[in-house]
Image 1 (cartoon, one colour):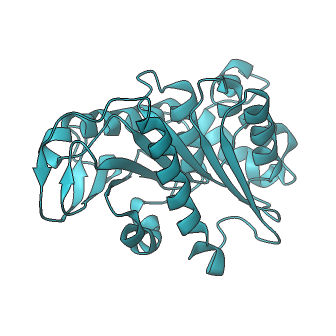
Image 2 (cartoon, one colour):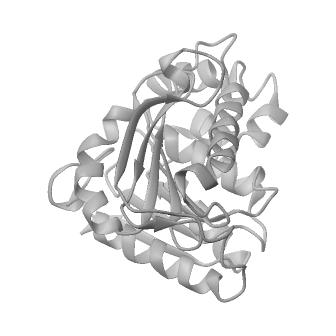
Image 3 (cartoon, helix red, strand yellow):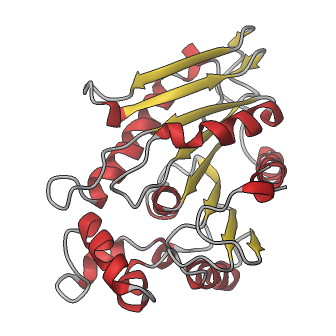
Length: 275
């Protein structure tokens, strides 16, 4: 079952990294489970810059690790509530993980583009770091999980902007990894190209550098965090070639990864694979 496999892989990654990293920020503890909804992570009151916070009982800054969830929606739609059903399945299995399910500003083709969305992910993480003692969580080891466009943001943050090396695992649910290929080689360009141009603000012909810098696959190095990939073989929105090529790049760089495909499943699959 996919959610159980995500939990297993995340737990293994944290276990391995705990052998080589510090044990946390101290011994601050909290006994009661706490759920906070629509917490602003910037000074803005916009719902697009809010998160839901799920803090487990008996948590501590030494042992309670952190999972960030980033929703999909073609970069221009979706909401953190899209993960609510998955969270209902995942949270009982997570045990001592704190979960932060975030919104971010949605692309509009002009004032909000990919960089603004990455800025929001960075702001959300900075907010979480600032709350480590108050929430009694460990922010030295963080997992990031995203679906579709959210997976693209999760990968880009984890590969290109993980300057403090706190992200130790990333879960990629059928996310785009190469924006140039998504634009130029998509089987349905009439559908895909306007969506991609809306978040990139340009085309690869006009600004190849923007597309290069917006593609997680171009930032795979030997220091890339372990990556878990899930993709349906019949996905016509984000072609599975996006995940195949990422897997190959991770393999060349000798990065730990798990590559999981689901035969006949399309984009954002439902049913048995989600339980």
